[in-house]
Image 1 (tube, helix red, strand yellow):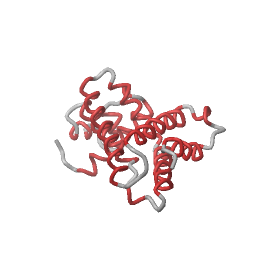
Image 2: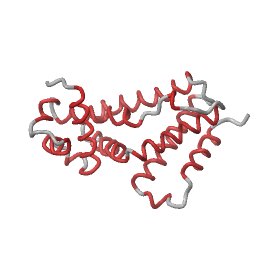
Image 3: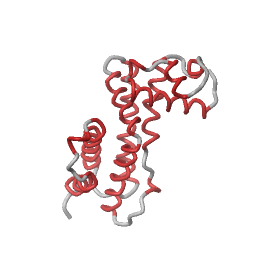
Length: 187
């Protein structure tokens, strides 16, 4: 396998775009090469097989939208948690292809046990990182709060990116703020 890290990332990002546009069935090495603008056969030099490419795309999607602790500017813990949720919503909205690719990967994982294992690990690790990030960051709430917000945001983002007309009259930032307020215990 070839080991140019920048080219590998560009190919994975191209695979994410192909997944979002054409679905998992449209993901071929040729389609990735075309999307990345590289010579035919390049992707096959970087990935052992299609499952390898799917697995690496699953891992990359979360890196593209991750919100880091250093991005928070609020000093009040509740306001900081709300800010992180807003950042997440907008980061994912700005990378619509990444989220749609993740949906395609989820569907494909129902048919491919190896991808299911990879995606389950990736999503479980992401959830645990969110829980640990809340703990380490001194954010309010408990582990259940993190779970509630994680799945509330997942549902909101799913609706917003797949059928935006359903929420056309809803202030999404206000809704996210309400998620945080209602998920946290009253003080």
